[in-house]
Image 1: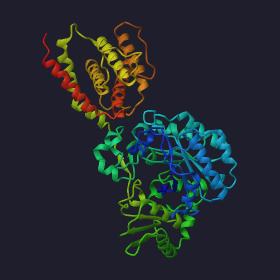
Image 2 (image 1 turned 30 degrees about the horizontal axis):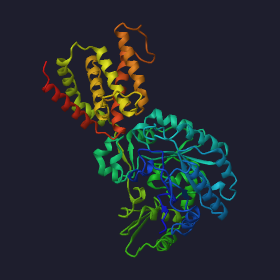
Image 3 (image 1 turned 60 degrees about the vertical axis):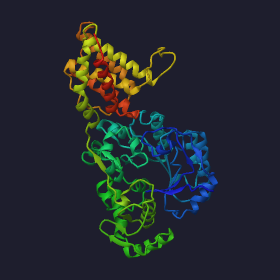
Image 4 (image 1 turned 90 degrees about the vertical axis):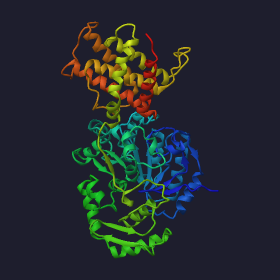
Length: 552
């Protein structure tokens, strides 16, 4: 039985003839089937894929075509070979569609040169480069330096580039990170498409790196996408990045780079979510002024019939002021609405999505973005519940200590426990201790959090409201541990005292480093899908049970 590999998405018609990716991104929509950690699988031949594309009810020359979005086209040589086959066939057929290629892998130079030889379609090829300032815990097998090379290489060969700034999540939504990303990208393209985190019921419960989502699960699933407030404010309150244009609607970004006009003109998205150059708005305005809505309504019915949609009971409302056709009492998918919007050059929307539609929510189905406040509820809630219990446990444990502990011995214990964390993560016979069962990551993380709480108690350091609470770079932990130990060695006259530039005092430096260390250790649990409240509570129960049975 032939697999149907053509789907109409919110902006383009997709060719999904390969599925699977080894990049392992923790926000990936392929997670439910584990295809975000699997080698790509070819579902149909490139010839069959093109045949299905051209026979799709959605295919017209006006519809952009996105190639292989269920994998990364540049993940390996086999994918690249298949992509070349598709492009060669499209070139030979002289299709006039815009061809979309999205990637977060390195594009070989010989492929770029090959694209330049496709004279029938090279001007229609648009690269979406996904570069979002995320770390390798959320994108574990992505080489971000190679993504940056793509911008430079494609720019030098004069190919059209759109920057995909997705997803925007707490980890990459600070002003510092956003500005850094845009500063690099703007050298090579002035167009970015920004999106929050897109969610589906099939994988929302795997999003451990953004705990706030679990507190508003229903709203998140009904939203077009979930956004951190800091990113939303950056783009829609204080945005002043000169000559760089921002879009939430892919269709509008495409019209800018292709110098055409868009169906979204004068809609809510046009007026409030897209930051567009005046020249482009004037082009769309001129097109909008000549629209014949009587003829558009006739064409709408013709197109509904073409894609086999029964519209006899449909209620059609045309709003000329915001260039929108609203359809109710009719069962439409996001793909149906996207197709209609493209061919009619008017935004076509409905009040709810087809119940069988597995695609993401969209503004076409009247979904709105959900903006979550930038709070630190994950760490702050943890501290509210467990900080005092942690200090009580450490004070109770004094009766088991042969000698009185001070800050230096507590730091030594912290070093031991951090070693245990790395022993669990990087278990190897070369370093493992015979007879030691150091294999429970949750327990070892809890031990480290316990020691950091106690150090903060001894040194009168406030752990709550950590500024960099969304840091996930585990490799920074030994550096922070060394810096904190060095401060205490200086304060106890084991080393010469030195000033830390950029800080009013060494105490200020110490406070920041301890707080950041706590966040990093806590987030190791988050990215390993651990419920740290549950893990810490288990540790407390075990420890207190030990104390109850301890005899001096």
